[in-house]
Amino acid sequence: MHGLSILAPILLCVAMMSIYIVVGALTLFRLESLPLSDGVYFCFMALSTIGFGTLAPGTRRESAATTWFCSGYIMAGMALTAMCFNVLHDEIIHRLRHMVEMQKEIKNHNEQRRFLAS
Image: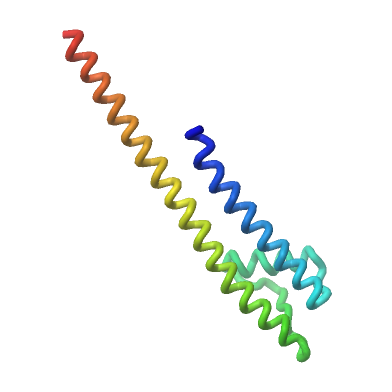
């Protein structure tokens, strides 16, 4: 059960980010008729803060809705990314503390056995 504890938040965060990217790509497909592969590429690049790449949805004059969507999408996506990093950080810190406590218990147990054996 202890090994699954760290796996669940990782899988949950990866699933949430993947779903968020796919939903963003589908929305860009509906708003701009952007191919899904280009939408996924744009959403991933925008959320990973690598940059926008060569794609820039919302560059047409009549696409104010796309510009607003992209702005909100990127801000909400950065909040989601930060939340996922925080969850993973907390889980890793918890696991490391648990490992240190277990090592201390093992060390104390070994010292007690050595003391009783002598």
